[in-house]
Length: 119
Image 1 (cartoon, rainbow, N blue to C red):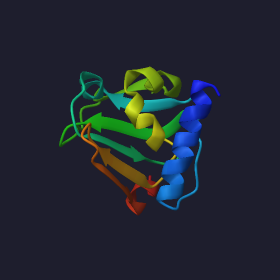
Image 2 (image 1 turned 120 degrees about the vertical axis):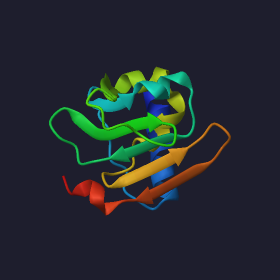
Image 3 (image 1 turned 90 degrees about the vertical axis):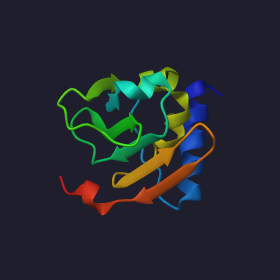
Image 4 (image 1 turned 60 degrees about the vertical axis):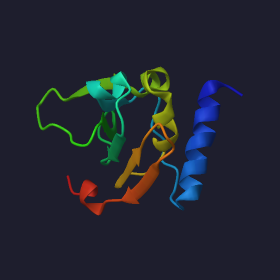
């Protein structure tokens, strides 16, 4: 089994756990990733808008709040997330309209936010 296959299986398990369909994030597509995710800061937050063009719809940041600054989220190929912060990858199969909040102590919250679909 390749590393990518393992991550795909992990994503499918998370989706099964929350009873939602697995929605692939293509490995060559783009995610919006805040620099603070790369520092190891907690908690890690993610939200998914509908996929558009070459993006997965994912925006991921760390800490309690995110910034509205235009450069807060940087574009990264999804495949880079495998090495940048591998613990988040298993959540990136959740469908558009979902959020997650995790930390490095095992806290996990996943929920649907229909407002994310209204863009």
